[in-house]
Length: 441
Image 1 (cartoon, rainbow, N blue to C red):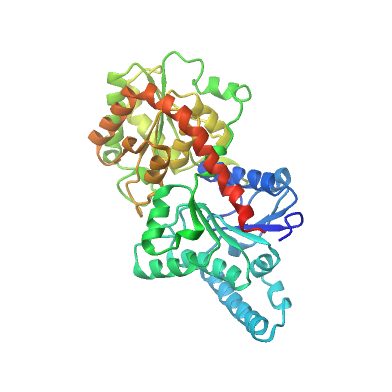
Image 2: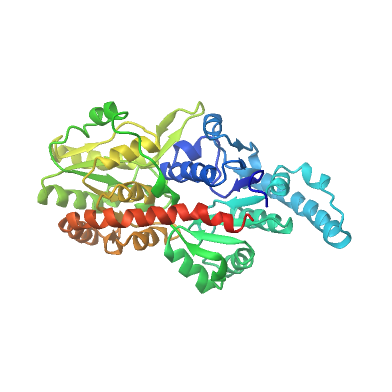
């Protein structure tokens, strides 16, 4: 393959409606920006297109093209019919190509997906933790179909920096095994995914453990965010800051986007924050790592914000402003990473909120999920970094208090450990991109 003139197509189940990748779950953007940025570094002359719905500004900034088509981010009946038609088209193409050696590419041209796959020299599947039980069955089937289409066309496919699984049902396990044993390379962003896939029978000859590209995501320079930091009473500091990020996934009952929550659901977190403020001379900063957008693309509060607001209302009458505050503004991922970077200690129920802290060498406790398919990505990242002792159960206030207390007592040691470990983790994150040359030849 000529890397000077290659075309890279980035697809994946992470694709959602326009604006969501950039402004909703901030962790998604914290992966997406380094993904494109480091692809450009490794393949400076490559043409990059994506099915992920990125804004025109993003595409212009990084010189990529985002393919605008509903079938890339909707998974209902219409998409199922489109995929069924694509199955027919690629079956006809494959019959004539492999039996009679006739290349009937015109059959593929009217399908935006098949056309992109056919023109690409390298295909990157960026599905995060959605390739598994976290996707409804039709979305999971669509993800499998896209990968198999690419392989029928003879294209190299990378399952890139994700956390595949879990696969709770037999049919998902069997289909995933069939698909994943046919991709050319799997890079897992944490070791538990590698262990899970090996146990399923995925051959490890084409699978490596790396690290999440979000470890490479840059915060906004503190000088640029100074007005925000002052307005949110993050700076100037009068006490050590303890950041606290909570999400709907940490709640005991689904769905994760349900608001408001019963006060009883928030009681373990009320108890935890009460313990922190009673035992340590600190200021707790409550924050959300997720937003929404309205029809005009303006930021509006997401479900996590409403949960944090409800938690704040249960607590603020007990504490002074120099003991407890809440980030009330709505910010992009880079600004939120700057806010997190001002903290001396972090407790996070969002994976990429935790990564935003860990990557800045902040002692961090991770709150596990409390509802939905139980993902291994949180424990996997904790294992990758070496902080397995500091992941806690959101339904058990005592467990959270014990883990936070242990981490607080060891915070100086953790910080020094992270200063040594982070360069190694970031090197693993960069390896996601360097290893692509091995299959692009």
